[in-house]
Length: 182
Image (tube, rainbow, N blue to C red; front, side, top):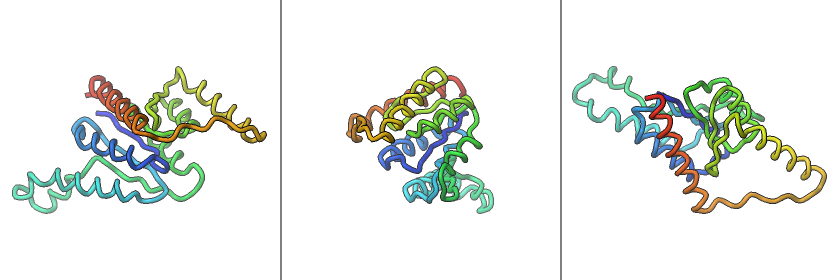
């Protein structure tokens, strides 16, 4: 089994829906899927409730209520205190291999990669120890240019192609982790 850690503070809802659908489908292979945010996300909360109900349904007439309550979704919502980097710090403190993370935050990705966690960003890019330092350097350079008043290239808006690239990368990484750890 492997785990999935998600920096959910600014992850688009469409991305969360893709993740939730895939985690429910592959739940027997996933230890836990943790969404970290400084607020409760209603779509994640609803997915946890629905998944738990679906898992319990075949056992409703077979188990007593106390045993039935032990059956729970492997999707979790970690609501952290409001503050700079609080979700990031939670993820770094709690992420363990085997597992991967999802985040578009490059400094967080760097911290997770240092722990041996592969990171998938919201555009379908994968960061590992091989490429994260270059991506962090690019990000820091662009930040310095903006601080000096230079306009920089803006990221493209999320379109269907971007969402599809993310979904395809998520499928690829889950398939890879299933083969390696299950």
